Length: 348
Length: 226
Ligand SMILES: [Zn+2]
Image (cartoon, chains in turn cyan, orange):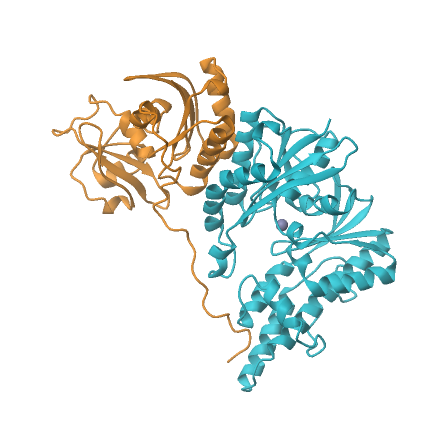
């Protein structure tokens, strides 16, 4: 008998409610994926304001849930289990989703699972491309995270190979966009400008690629500063800033480092499948370069469609379904959200 | 009618099942823990335990009453998200009440010694401020809610309920009276007329009183010397 899993996500600025059907053979089918975003309320601050995000979550939680059930043609009484993002993320934001999830699970008398947001970004790919081969390599890139992970079992076993030592990749995009006078969030406008620019125009640095640097860690702070320095220099000389070339050259540096390290990790670990997910996975150059380099290395590349890559409830429902299928333990009703939940903890 | 009352606007994590019958308000089961950092952990278990203590199931409830603050933001939202989701899942109306009104509803005339029987309710807003409101002898709110530094509160009233009165009684020259925190019965009393009239509930909107801390960024910082 198939089961309906509800997923609730509130770790950053998107309130997401997803519904999936877990089939007896383990296949997970997407039924609804409703998201209410507060991104516009953060735009003028140039980054997510935690209190603004938390207020928006409280306002959006029930309406988003109602929309998801309407979309799926289901009622709350059809739910067999609930999964909620327990971390990592913003403390006040997580608390809203976790509180609501506990209340829904209690009122509906169904099991509750507190799950890891980062693992959700990987699990979401199974909604589009089917079961994940084990092991696989995951590159998570977004405004909040930049991580290289080895996935031996999506329901229970994830190991971090590397992560950013400073800014997340998406954060670097936001900061460079500000320097170039482009809007927040910076990913889409930089990607657009880069399409008309020359990626080889400016040789920006590739962070943490020296022989003594950690093989699988990333650093984007130096790159961001290099872009700012270059733009200020051009401005001081009275030159017009070639926004397209700067965007293309910056984007090339980001995509180059991300894919080079991911490919190297896959080769060293003998892994034949790579998943790229998170908001920055929608970036056209990253996808293109990853496809090129994966093909050359004989690695299968899986990138979920952009809508699934950004934060949503479907990813949490998908992960919840895998956790349910693996018969992992349920969460106690008094569990705490953990803003710094380690990626190794797939479910509480 | 059986009402579940929830409030997380103060350090107390409060849930109770209350029977309301005309003027009679009777607490059947309640769970309260004073721990400012456990709202998200305890409010749902407390609601369940309160129902159990009352010998009822959540499905036996007729309505929910939720304190909507004012209260320090994060904890307040835990209770409100819980009330909203419980109401949605159980198909129950959720009635918002100002948490200070719930405290006021529990003030008994014996505690109010001032000549005109007016009193204040004052709770801890953190950052050395208080949330406060003024009430007349009938328990009707006449001023507030406000958020202010205790020294800036201008009032002639000399008695105040709530933990803010205990914390800042000396600065304010007010005499603290009971109660310290909202009770399930107080929450239901504050919502009594709406509950009995079976009015459609007002929107469940938090009383934040403060704007979020956020400043618009200036131009990007220079990284090179001008
Ligand atoms: Zn994310």
